[in-house]
Image: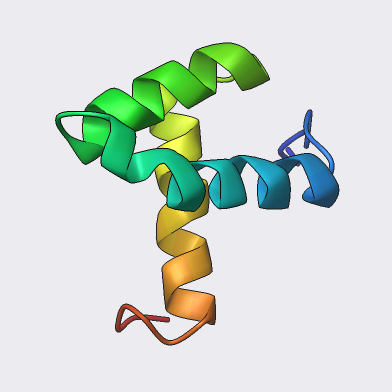
Length: 64
């Protein structure tokens, strides 16, 4: 069974960029994730996964 991609790559990139740009405006990273996820219309955990994938892909975080 394949996983449906409800959000386009552009929306995912925009959400990650929003988090990077506005992270300092919140008391914690998770608070920023929750706020931005609400605006995008996704679950906070989903945005968190996108951010982790972006960090791995860009070499900021180790992983595969």
